[in-house]
Image (cartoon, rainbow, N blue to C red; front, side, top):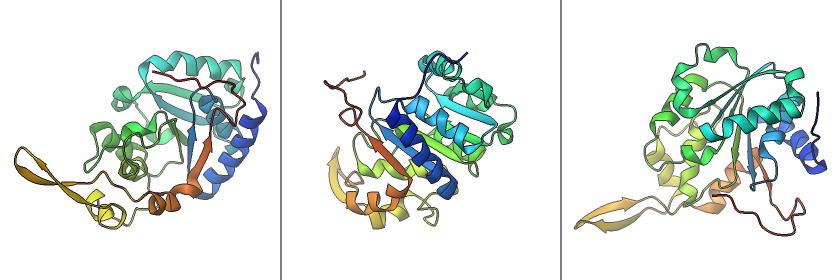
Length: 219
């Protein structure tokens, strides 16, 4: 039984997101906390015609996502598996999913070298259509965006062999001293150039756009 309905802006963002997903195989929902990233992503799955969806998230969020899946009635439209990143290796048939959602996608945003779960995600789902969710896409540096898209075969930078090759074109590389040694600092990503490449994948939405009277922060 459906007990929740999407807000108007979630409906519109879902339609835009589905169109982006169809065209580019990636859509990135960069939406502020409490604006309904989860519900919007699930509606995109429905509009896309997905039949089996994988939703990777943090362990503490699994129960609320499962509740939204039922409350909005998406259990009538497609099957879903919701697990945390740390359980990714337990998935028995990764090829069976026709769409993958990755929550808090900025967790893949390490500089220079990809993390353990970033590499695992890429190995398992490289050619799958993907929905990325994050309220803080680049919390510290625009250079953090590279590995977030590196996991997909449809990355706009798939022709770069690794982060360092990409950074030569997209980062103002600087030198800084650590323990008397000079090392390269890759944190100064060139915002205009980076966002120029990824804007076609993006849907951004703020609490102000949603009509919130006061800003809600989540810790």
